[in-house]
Length: 357
Image 1 (tube, one colour):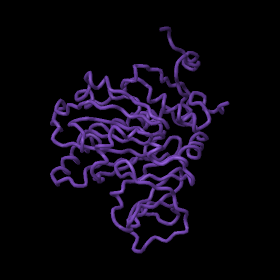
Image 2: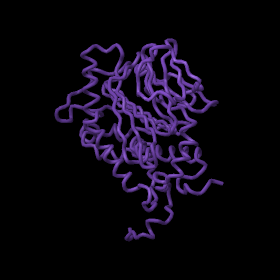
Image 3: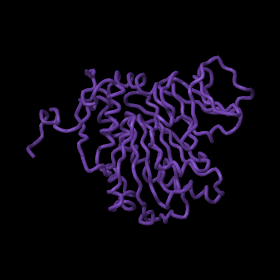
Image 4: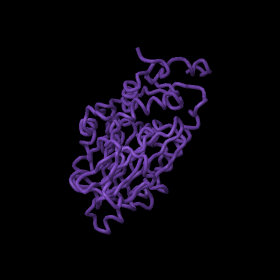
C-alpha cells in the first residue's frame, strides 16, 4: 500500500463508512434528541426499583424529565417538573396535572417510556424479536435489580453503543482473550432486526481459564445452558447482556455531542437464595462492576475515542467495510445501526450535514 497522506485520508472511501461529524456536531446532537430520542421507546427503569405502592423513580429522555410511579395496580409515567429526587415514596396518591406518558413493562420487567403522544408501535413491536434469544431466561421468573451505578463519560453516546456492535475491540480485554477466544467465539453471528436492533448469538465462556476465576456453570438463568453469553443491542443506545449467572443492562442518556450518562444495572432472580444472590453479585461485579475486569476498559476506550472526535476536531471517515458472513467481526451491526440512524435523521451518516434527497 502506498504511503497515506492527508489527501488520501480525507478522500471518499470505496466501501461503507461514516463521517466522524456524527459524533461531534452540536446541531446533529440536537436533532437526535428531537428526531430519535423523543420518539422511541426508552427502557428507563426496572419494576423492581419501584416495587411498592407510592414508589417512584425519576429520569430524563431527550432533555425532558420523566417520572415513573407505582399506583398499586400498575406503573404509570408522567413528565416531571416538580420532583428532584432520583427515587422515593409518595406519602399520598400522586395527583398531577401533567400529561400521562405511554408506559409499558416488558422484557424481563423493564419499564419502557416514550415521549411520543401517539406511538405507532407497542414495545414488543418496537423491539421486533430482538429479545427472543433470551426471552425464556428473563421472562420465566421475576428479575430483581441488585446492582446500580452510573457514569458520565466525555464521549458521544453512539461511541458507547459502537463498543457493543463491533467486537474487534474485544482484543483489548485480557479476560475475553483468555476465556473466550476459540472457534465457537469467532463463529458467533450478528443478527439484524428491524428498527436498527441486533442480537449476538451465544458461545460458551471458559471462566476457569482466567487466573483466580472458577467455572460458573453451577448457576444460570431459567432455560439458559451453563456459561452462555448472549447480547441484545437496541437502537438507539440500549444494551442487554446475559452472561450465564449475571444479567446486565446499559441505558444511555445523551447530555451533549461529547457527553453521555450511562446507567448500569445488574439483575438476579427475585427468588434467589442468599447464597445464589451473593454468587451472582460476585460474578457480575468481577466483570462488569465499576472495579470489574472489563467495564473500565470499555470506558477508557470510548473516552479516548471521544477525545479524538470531540467538537472542533477535523472530520475523518470511519470505515465499516468488514464483511465476514455475519460472524462476530463482520461490521454488519455497525452498518445496520447507521442505516437506521440515517433514516430517522433524514441524512446519510457518511455525509451528515447534507440533507438526504
